[in-house]
Image (cartoon, rainbow, N blue to C red; front, side, top):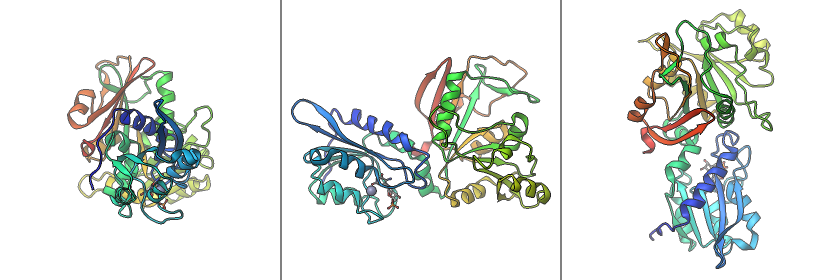
Length: 375
Ligand code: AOF
Ligand code: ZN
């Protein structure tokens, strides 16, 4: 059994499927957000006759919706799936089986599924059922949407995105504090969208204290899509008066702190609805042991985390090799010599990461890098 080669239209439809998969990213729990497009050609060119995306909460799977929409038109059609279709009996029968039964002639898939219940078995089930399979089409691009899911499987912790705004001269702020506005309004809206696609946002206590941020998603029509807020605050400096505490009943808020931190303050924060995750100090540096913390956060069902705040925090995650995706946003502002140098700039990132996309939002340029693992 050999898989079949790519066809000219495959990348175009897979790219569309990947964009569709992003629709529910950050909303499918520990299940990856994937998409299926069913495409048929009756001699007048290929057209989409069914589409599906993993439902909010993780089920039903993408294939179910796409097949339901296509109905009889699925017979003889091609299915584009951003992840290898599942082969296991969960709450529903395997998607690979459903595709065979619907008479799909060919399946084009992108990312392989590391879940051992699937892992190659989905493709085999399709081939055994007489379906032609073309795997690995835009695999890297598809993997980026489900980075958290893949990282959970390979590293037993959430997938980490680090986002930093840099001035034109590579600074991230002014030494000694004070917020400098680096990016414009279009970028800021895009930031809210990126937030919505993660399970959690993490900032250091320093950033929280200085800016008193809301750290939520404030896009029109996207209320209720704010991720969990995590504040890395080993010595518990966050006060119950701060915005994150005051709004903890509407947006889940967690503080990662040493067990030795002030129990009275902890009780006051808990009364506002804040929850806690204990962290330990790295015996060598005295700083928070990040791998252990991430493992614990992963165990609570958090699959992806966006690290947004503070030069020190950014540097800690980078030097510990805990960044799967790096987003650098370069604004037009020049800060000059008094500015705080960023722990990594665009040129430095090019050496350690692979640039997947470069976009312009307003006057700012977004550089979207992925780590070495997915080269
Ligand atoms: C698909 N299509 O849309 C998704 C898949 O707990 P279950 O039964 O929902 O299975 C979870 C596993 O299903 C998950 O680990 C991954 O292997 C696969 N996700 N598969 O065919 C989908 N979201
Ligand atoms: Zn499935």
